[in-house]
Length: 148
Image (cartoon, rainbow, N blue to C red; front, side, top):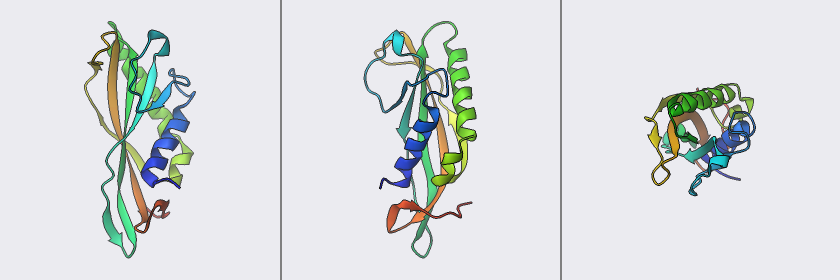
């Protein structure tokens, strides 16, 4: 079984597939350059997962992931990036499957939109999301159900 942090990424990817203008173009850490026909797209990147002891055999901490929105660059790139982010945010906030890995999903902010390095026709904006986790210290794949 994968860690709760990895489960978080998998649930987010599954929720976003087909649910936004990116359609099935939802990737985990894509490193290839984009062709215009592959946009818009969404990338999911696992972030930090700092844990601290919460009780006997129980650890607690926020699992973080970054969701990058990728669109064709142009005069409306920032508006298009924002619209894709708002679509994805609505899907994630309504996703019942996230309860299987943690609680209290929230967006902690976004990075400034930028032109992708080496891809002058591609713009990108990244949002960071956190989910509170309460897990077994002995088994990082096992979630306890009372995280608050």
